[in-house]
Each structure stands twice: as structure tokens, then as C-alpha cells.
Image (cartoon, rainbow, N blue to C red; front, top):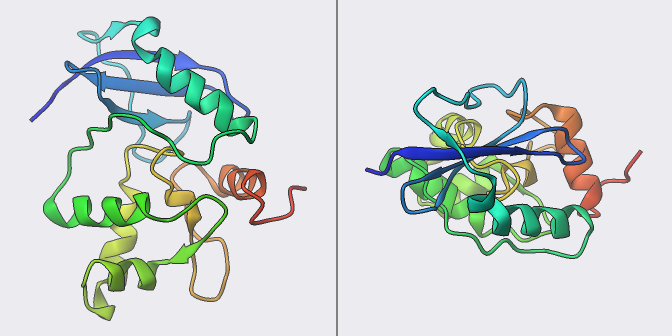
Length: 165
């Protein structure tokens, strides 16, 4: 099990982003202020902006509309079920959406597991780079997002899924 050792904050069109990494430099979380279940730096963590240069560059390219797929070393801790859900999220392409039911089907979970899938998506520690914002309701509605529905709308607008208002 890896442990978060370093962090930094960067500015973005969505507000300040908190980035954390493990002792190997793999990104362990990306969260926004006020995020449900978001991380808060611990006293023993070191602020180390240089360790996140590649993440910052890829995020800047993404927000500029120049990057469609992140290529970062990720390390998210979670149960086997959550890991399977998160891997399915990684397969949802830029500019596309999917549903909770489709994610459940993709990982071989029964239809009754849709709520558990939603819980795993809500616990995603890597907003933006692991695209939980691309999951919508079966009726096409924008449903919960740990970073807030306004941020979800903005991300989907950036990707051309929604009209950016």
C-alpha cells in the first residue's frame, strides 16, 4: 500500500486543485475545494510543486482543449470493486458519456449494483484525470459529482458534450 508523501496546489479554470502523490511520484488524488470526500494536506506531507510538473502541464493542455487523454502514473487505493469501477471510468473516452448502468455492465456487476457503482464513482480520488464527470443518469440528466454539478457541467462543456453556458 502506498502512502501520500507530497502535495501541491495549482490554479485551474475550476478553481484551486489539490494534487497529492505517493512516495514513488504516482498521483494519489486530485481534488477541488469543498469536494465531498476531498483530501486535506496533513502536517507530515511535503509541499513539492516540482514533483507535479507533468501533471500540471497535462492539466493545462486539457483545459486548453489540446489534450484528450491523460498519460500519468496513478495510484488510487480502494477495494477490488472500486478498482474495477475506476478502471472502467478510465475507458470512457474524451467527449463521450456513459451511465452508471453501463459501468456496472462493463465490470460484470448485476443491474442491482448500480447504486454501489455510484458509490465507487463518488469515491474516485482522482477527479478530472479519472473521468467520473463523464458518467450521467440513464435519462441523460447530470447526476452527482463530488466536485459539484457546476464543475461537471464545465468539464462536459469543455469536452463538447454540453453547450458551455
